[in-house]
Image: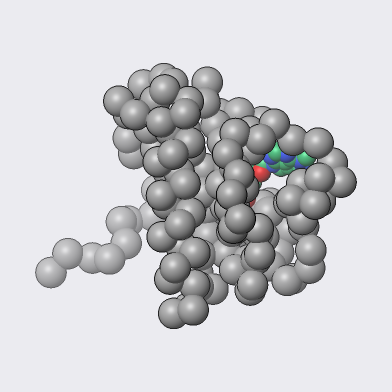
Length: 144
Ligand code: TR5
């Protein structure tokens, strides 16, 4: 029987440190985040795609030539993917489809990655669900 988790390793130790840092800086308090200000256009962002329910804008600290965040305009408790429940099924599908539209608009349909960091152990830093759409370079596997 395969273990659910890989053995602890040095790189896992680094990840633990990164997660601890993320948790120390930010935790899922449910409070409004910087993304609310972006949605309300109180602070500027570089918008790539927008519809009634979804906003996609460029990450301020890009990790690839294309790095776009796709977020729900109405968070509705979706601070992190791990908090999703059945009522979020529709918006989750819309977000994933919006990620594909973003990839198409950005010309990276030949290869792109969609990442969701959920919770402190995954180094989530902004507690408003977001999909990272990354591309424009060769991506590596496994991710860090
Ligand atoms: O670490 P997670 O998965 O929570 O991703 C949060 C992402 O939000 C990071 O990749 C940040 O670079 C990004 N971020 C943070 C801010 C920000 C942003 N992207 C665009 N505009 C931003 N503003 C204006 N302010 C931020 N604090």
